[in-house]
Length: 270
Image (cartoon, rainbow, N blue to C red):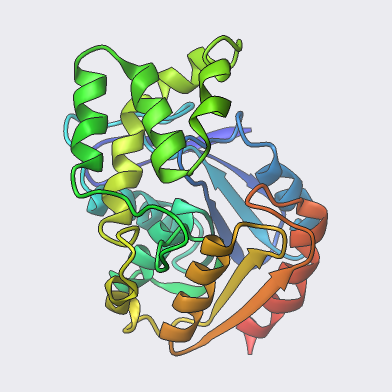
């Protein structure tokens, strides 16, 4: 059953709750939300006997509302409202750019008991093109000019690093219209990522003050740049463990992820 909290700026944030026990909030990456990403619910069900798992639609997606203007702080406030509803503290599990958002939440001082980060898409090596400084502005321009499909294609080719010849046929698929509806939120994730996809690992040093116990995960079958980003942030965070999940990619299987989480989450209770 879907419920909601009201964030600081008045945006309504829709969420679902599964299970009992310490709170765990799952944070989606770009374009993800509850109806679109069933992986989260599988994870919630698998952990329901030990944790109260919150899944939610980030602002501007699914059943959640939005505000006239955007800031990363607004999304941090959304998480804060969920944590308050959960009883005042929670662990956070973030996927992709959602992993970077939970780092931002911890950096902002939210009452977070632990962080689990799956493949934050940091670009810290030269084995792929970095994101240019005008990336977010071009996304916003495409949406403002009524070209949401171009914004989606820009995200897929530049941020997700998908070959253009794979993206163009996707425009004819039935799901493309749903992706276009989410195009305005791509600029939100671009703001969250900031300069961390620039190719300079020094940009990740801003997270060094995050002392929250953290599990950094990446797929053993993912592209090398994602593994490099995970390894780099794990080396910067003062209280982090790094784990590779064999045969997994950016689209991780919950059947593989849940055991890794189950092994790590109990350590937060000590």
